[in-house]
Image (tube, rainbow, N blue to C red; front, side, top):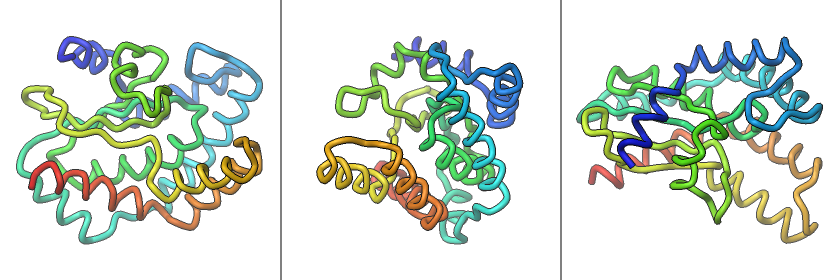
Length: 201
């Protein structure tokens, strides 16, 4: 596992590098990932606009900032993502702002499709769902915890929709984006902080 993590970190990007890569690919008519399609390009374009907005509007709660500032040691937050993923677009700006609140967090983003060996270690119900946050001890690269691909409220919305309609269609995706919009990153912050507190308790 350590070798796989080291390889993934070598292939990873800073948040700014990831954003620049996504923008460059969109300009070429592409998305990140091994599969290319008009739909994935369209989602990447939508997500770029969402992330631009969220970077301006998301705020980290004062109590969350305090807890992040008081972390006991240095961590790497390694996130597996792709530019076409709607959940990643909603969650990455929140994770980025959280990482910026603490000198003890080094945020790295790696593309899921380019790092499948690591992705296979963090499947959700057997699927390669993203984003997936992997919290590492910065010194040993030991996996401390992982989180994702969605906060509980968003996950429950999709489960309920699928139970009612049998599928996850465009209406479900619209409802999910509205959930994120109303939540303003609050549940993501709270769940990640709770994860740290449970591990460090």
